[in-house]
Image (cartoon, rainbow, N blue to C red; front, side):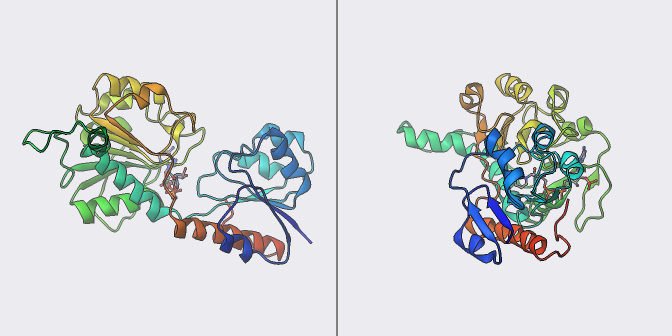
Length: 316
Ligand code: NAP
């Protein structure tokens, strides 16, 4: 009987759905430690890892000929797994595309609205007891309806954000993407990231993490943004050069930012936490119960296919 490791607790309906194997559910919610990563490859036939579980080239190098033949990742982003090293070691990798799309787009909209309309700041004001009542020039923010949005990474999530912006908020959509897209709504492709940054009121980051996109949003891109413009990142923390973002926010070079992810997650620099013009969420992109169950059931479908020797539905 195949031995399967779930590296985190999941909703019960997910773990119960997997049949015909010997399942271990790790109780801790923190990422796998150095020894656990190696033991996972050595002692199990398949593993469900997730965000923060660093299956790096070094880890694969330490476990030649691993028993593990599948890393069935919980999540669409898999930049914590060195896919090349996995392939070389004979380990397949799957992910959970689609299940996360709408929920993550919803969090992008939450951040756009919170940043534009200063909702975090306003909530802190009310909670502090210092609010003195409505007046016509109190906490004036940026009106979002009808404004220009720039999407960096027009994939599944990028398109779901763009749709919400176009159909829900009458916004003009432009995008920067590796390839041109055939889209079901009007959107202009811009060839230069800096040019896109310079023309929009909100720049939203939705590319995958990894070496190709690391620090894609750097000081130069931030400098191109207009002083009232907002940056929203729901992708991966290190796509944005966090130190440069802090400088831009401190100097008032951009209007504000909304972040769901951080370069050195879960560490969030004190400098960011001290700023009023940034909204900080604890990586809530997919954190809705139904969504986490759907993601889990996609993992189970991949594990079940592996157990039954069938083609993997979501191989990356
Ligand atoms: P996706 O469908 O693969 O979309 C990614 C898009 O980025 C694609 O359109 C791709 O271009 C583009 N892209 C990739 N590298 C690029 C580059 N170097 N320059 C320009 N464009 C590039 O992925 P998705 O499902 O939308 O997910 C996107 C990412 O969101 C995930 O990888 C994950 O890290 C993150 N995420 C975060 C949360 C959260 O909780 N905050 C939740 C879910 C996902 P092509 O079309 O040419 O390939």
